[in-house]
Amino acid sequence: MLTAAPRPRRRSRAGVTLVELMVVLVILGLVGTVIMRVVLRQQRFYAGAAAITSERADLRDLATALPTDLRGISSAGGDIYAMSDSSIDFRLPMGLSTVCVLGVGLTSVVVPPASLASRSGVTTWTAAPVLGDSVLIYDEGASSGIADDSWRPYKISGAPTAAACPNTTRFTSTAAEAAAGVNLPLSAALPATTPQGSPMMFFRHAHYGLFQTSSGKTMLGYYDCPAGTCGAMTPIAGPFLPYAATGSGLQFTYYDSTGAVTNVKTSVARIDVVVRAQTAAPVALTGGNKSYVRDSLAFSISLRNRQ
Image 1 (cartoon, one colour):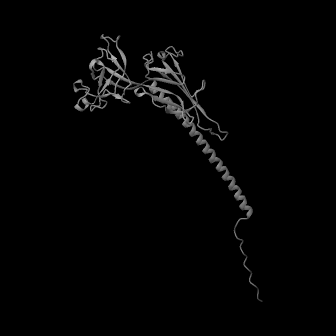
Image 2 (spheres, helix red, strand yellow):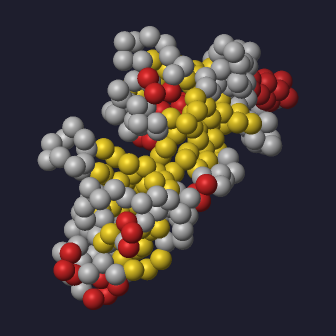
Image 3 (spheres, one colour):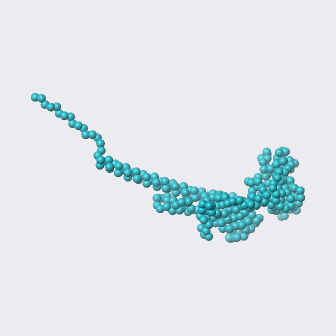
């Protein structure tokens, strides 16, 4: 008797159901949402941290620039031209030199060139002097003591020109160096007690203060006045908070040698500075509401040449 062979059983095809697929997609969506939230939160955190770092860098820039130029002020010597709670005009040192040759009638001096082969030059300046700049020249006085010694102020009354600083003065050593001296006409004649070799200091009117740019930012500004003509305000650091009677972006307070607040320019011995800034835009470091972050820096500048 013949019997039919059993039919092989078909294996079920591997796969997922629609319900399983939907569950997987929902889980992936939730995971992706969580990941995106973490990424966005990290981005906001790092953007906020960068904004705060930039704000604090602006504060440090100001704290570096001001003491460098203000510490050498001689208040008793008239170096402060004007001062307020947010600005100061002062005499900024521009260079040093020595009298190589006294001019005819003592109305001019020749100084050695700034560049010498021996690299032991006595002339150095951050900017070459021009007509209208100030210079202090040391006067030894009539006696051999120091009681009558003084620094006498002069203006450069004419354009500096090339002049000889001879090798016999020992300030130069070659013919080219001797011919590269600089003649400086002076606003008044030197006293006879000012000898060859007297030290000289060059100065220029300079200004630091708050100012507002065309874009509305409040910055620390600077200008100087070569040839007696003041240049445009140049931003040095910022932005800072705007000027205000209290809580100003930059605040100067002046003290005399007893520690009392003073508004007398020749009595200033210390300048206290407070600078305040805030981030350029609202930030959110912890994922909460965005807000401006403010910071401040306070420091004191003791004048080396105070009375």
